[in-house]
Amino acid sequence: MSVEVADVSFFYNKGTSLEKKALDKVSFSIAKGEFILITGEVGSGKSTLVRHLNGLLKPHSGSVRINGIDSTSKKLRSKIGLLMQYPQRQLFGKTVFEDVSFGPSNFGLKDEELNERVSASLTLAGLSHDIADLSPFSLSGGQMRLVALAGVLSMRPEYLILDEPTSGLDPENRASLFSTLSHLKGRRISVIVVSHQIYDFLPFADKILLLKNGCVDFIGSRDEYLQSIASPIPEITSFMKELQKCGFEVTSNIYSVDDAFNEIIRALGSNGVNENE
Image: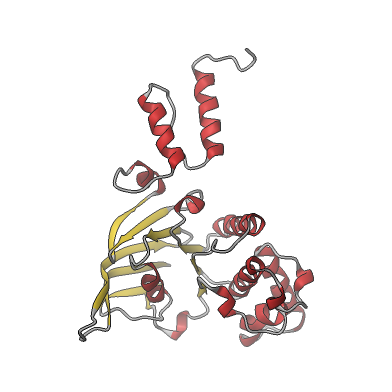
């Protein structure tokens, strides 16, 4: 099971004087259980690409196939979960329970089985089941985003698409989101994150796709991305590269301060520095 995007091109206002090419021969694949980060500047085509992945848009040329099926097929609706950039628009229920249970209840779940699904989904999203009877609109913006995520997770999708998921989250809710992503990665669920916040998702990413003016400017592994001169890299990675140039035997494929600290301690230890001195 996989996602196959082949030579996808798409135009807005095609055939008019306002015609604009949004995607230009975009190709990539996502294996089952893979975590891919799609990034790029505003206007690079990220959101347009997402709308192709969940079947909201159909390419003017090329194809998008998921598990061998065209992405616009109704057969895929329960297999693909989308958390929009403004998830408050996905909320509509009088209570959190009503929102999170909407999808699975429409697929026949009820009573105890439905309650268990809602509880498990709230827990996975980093939320307490105690909020189930509250109005989602009485919660903070960050909690509302996580409730919307719980609603998506309640359908147990094979593919999860998150559009700018950290937008508007405070540190506590960001931590909840990252914990959720760790659990999903362990469950071999394919996760597609669209974000310009590259550094936040590097620890999870198996593959990175960089869009520029609707074209694929880079695609490869996290390590390949960090080693790419053409791609913007975290400051901490640049710092580790500078240490290498100064003769320190450190790895430059580092993307967090904690990892950099541990790597420097390791390098100092291997060079015979006694931490007790």
